Amino acid sequence: MSEPGENHRLALDIFLSQHPELRTELDTLNPLAAQAKRETMAQYRAERLHEAFEAQAESQNLFAWELTLQLISQSPQEFEANRLEVHKEVAQMAGLAWDEYCQLHGLADGSP
View 1 (cartoon, rainbow, N blue to C red):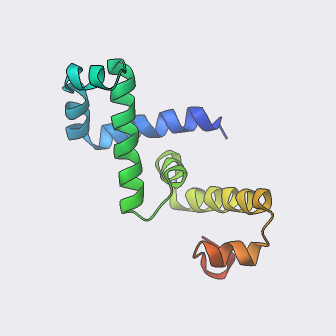
View 2 (cartoon, rainbow, N blue to C red):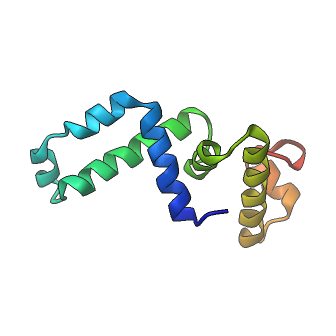
View 3 (cartoon, one colour):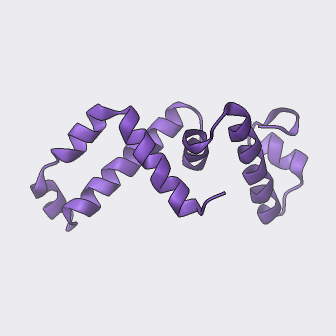
């Protein structure tokens, strides 16, 4: 699998291709709004893109990293396998038992 940063960049590209209206909106942002936030246009645009991406993930009841996996996966089965792998890694890093982690995150029967 590719590096997480590379995967996320690819997912953002796919996301933009699926939402041409967002691309248009991002391409026509007001430079004064960026200036008011003391950001470059590139920074301001990237922030708006990430906000839209996270809103899309939330609307699908997904974490942003799950939407990334969903967009870059070649099949629903690949997505589910990769998603389960990451959830298990997170549970392990958090020091939670798998059953406890599943209950905490609403994962039925130990599989997301």
